Length: 249
Image 1 (cartoon, helix red, strand yellow):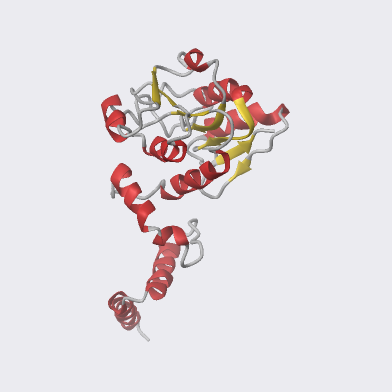
Image 2 (cartoon, rainbow, N blue to C red; image 1 turned 120 degrees about the horizontal axis):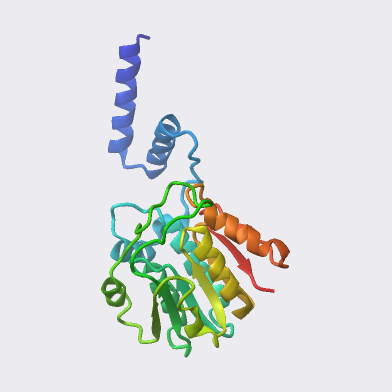
């Protein structure tokens, strides 16, 4: 069969799959195409429940938009982990808030429990990357107006805003205990500073979740977490979503 004949047959097959409406066939086609374009990416199994969770996808599209779904699995994981620790002693916190989508999920789990949710963010984007942070990020990336976050979290009256650079505002929560801490600051120094403050204030069984641990774009975040827990009893769990977390002993 000539090259043109093969190409024509391939196009007919693609069109047939697209017109068939069969989800499994479309999945197989998408995997085959992705393997040719970006072979490093590995598809998961067909039919994961996350892809059919219409309520969660609606949440994601409301607070994160529809331009991409890059953090859908990470937010889904955060949402599931909150089920483990929401009833433990202590408040919750997030370092690096961006538009507040992750904080919204956290607040949804602790609403009515008499807890506070603490937000730590400069609202001016990332600080200047250091020598351990690679070259992916630049100062000011991920900036978001505080007003956007306040609007997204307006239904929760137990959110405490600590505006400023990490760790300058941590002292405002020095008397608190925490059941869940989400660290999403991408860089080495603020990640390490966040761990140094929150670790001793996390209740036994509580979770510290680092959003950036498993990405080559955030070598500083991984280095900070590895360094901090080198001499601590907890083991870091690296998830296929790119997150890393520990459960406080």
